[in-house]
Length: 388
View 1: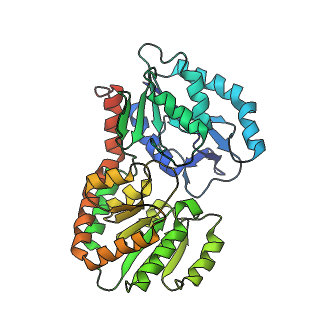
View 2: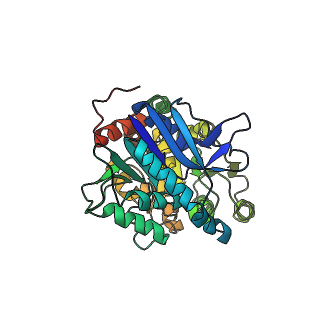
View 3: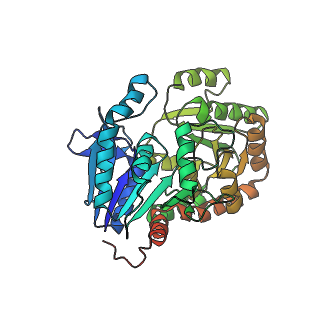
């Protein structure tokens, strides 16, 4: 069985030789590679050294089809889409002829090109198309690129001859659209994280809060600081760890001092996932007042595995999923006072926090790579196929 993957996952030339891609995606694709004999991944390769979060593929059967980087905010980068489109088009059609399963990760510029190239003719007999829509499936009034809406419109269309996976369960989902959980860790990592639930420090002296994400306005790191300051003003000994980097970090450091949080907040910068685990182990609540349009943030699943209860912005499927799991709270991202009140409720009712921490870990098992692989095989009709 041959799998073709088409995505915009950033890869970079590793100084030691070979290519390194964004770590969470590389790990996910390595798991998919266990289902297939050969895997070819068409993706842009960027200039410059790899980001610290990049990994090389552990799966020996993954071949990278290196493409020029396209997309971006500048006029030049957007014009590059038109310049490189014919090359992408030829490569995508070549992979269509080669593969038994064509997997497109969307929405972005590369997936739009793939959709335009693949949709008219559809899969050949015996072939399967699979689109993974990682964005918000029902954004409502949230702003988004018109291209995202176009891709979503086609994937909902009854004439769409592909399987489509999305984050969350939504009203009126057509038969080809399936609710999937965004994988974040292996089964063994999930079991190891269970130790954090039993060893979580009690709420006797301090409430530990954690934010993980880019330090930009839409992700909500600054709001997380304001929430912490408000909770402290209400008499709750809250401490915040900020993991991530971004262009707003210098201004946020100044804001932290203005809020009186210098001794109660730590900027950790960007950390690889294994180095975040000790923070998960001692954290009580994940603060994620994000207003960014996205599907299901992987950090929520990772935190839940360690018994960290999420208090998050009401975007995409987060509210429905946490309600189903029976843990956490969801509020409008800008409701700083509401987030502070949620922290206070957990502080004054530690038995509730302990109960929801256990539920968070219990339900986090749905985010394992193994669970994801099983669901993909069932969707594609590969249950009887022999694993490599």
